[in-house]
View (cartoon, rainbow, N blue to C red):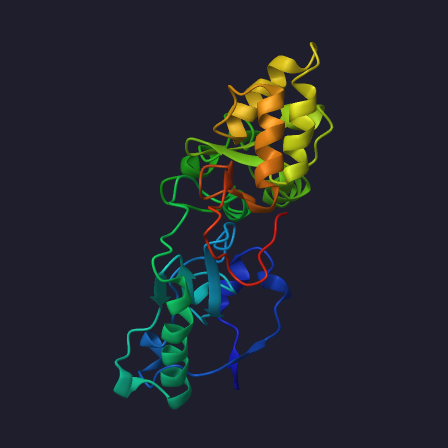
Length: 269
């Protein structure tokens, strides 16, 4: 390991200002510094489904700290470095071979989730840009949120980010816009991605004063909104240990197939 100066771009992202001045890293390739940065995906939401894992974070010159330098999605190994084997260090060559041996146990296990939305952490990143000096204005930032939600905080990025952090568990995407689920909050449910939310919505489906709202929320977060309360309970009970929620997958509860091998340490939220 060697100590490397913390990249300046890390400071621009949530949590970046709290990083130390140097970070421990190990060298992957012997190319010049400008081509020595590695990243295959942002950190945000990369592991929100059981078919993906970050094998090594990469020191990079454009994304946030913790972005994946080497990752796995289903049976795909994602290697974020350009050097040929003769341009790799000995540890990197060993690591590359270990990655190939490791991923063999995921043979034929294709990715469960395809990109259908943007992860909620992106709301913090974009929200922090309100009032920034863009050549073409802030319209794209304001349009990333429900109409009017960001506009009232224009020029007060810190307050807006604080609001988003406070409601992180209730953020979802509709089309290309981030929203805070006020309907879920009004029902006393504090997270849209924990399986307990399903249990509560099924119960509320049987009450006349909350039935319509619960049905609408089940349509938002599942593909089974037409099921009866009994059918939904049966579905949850049969799949409880394999149900996961994915932002990337469209802010939906999904079920991992019985034969699928999840990443080590994965468990239901």
